[in-house]
Image (cartoon, rainbow, N blue to C red; front, side):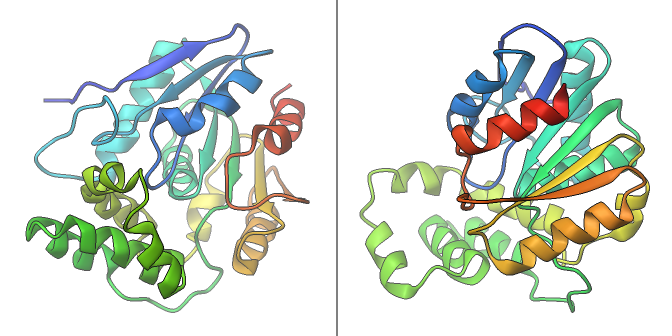
Length: 248
């Protein structure tokens, strides 16, 4: 059975759907959604297993693509899509799969150009979650995937949002399944037939800037934007202006 997918719909105009990343619910996307709603109908949703959305006993990337396809149908049959971090990897996979995406914006796509196969983060995280070690899964992701320094990982153990992170720990397996070995799949980029904007924050890890430029070179209709002053964060004051221009 397909799980219930919770979303907020706001604004009026051509539709755009926000696909967010690890540890994100639609709460984190709300400020950007509000900024884009000045000109667009925005669907801001909780990916499966997060927030108010349901889940299934087993996971497959194809099921998340189906979730996005269902939202596109709800939006009227076609929509622009904005993907952030691992959500950008999901959005790229969905566009390559042939969903009715009119414009595709990818922000801080966490994939490397020609990266060697890395550790199987999905399997490691799955083992921790299945063993009831959700806190360890959160810290594995922070330490091994994000690259946070050990003092910060220790500090975050007492953060007020720690319980919320542990509640979503199983979805880290989903994100790492989507990311795979971390290599940018150029065949997927070539398969995207709509206009594509690859954005990288100037303050993000350098590989994300190289990835954005590679995506722009490879896509049939792509361009890259390095966003000055931005970090790996959903800052509407920085993201909304270029997105509104791209979506116009």
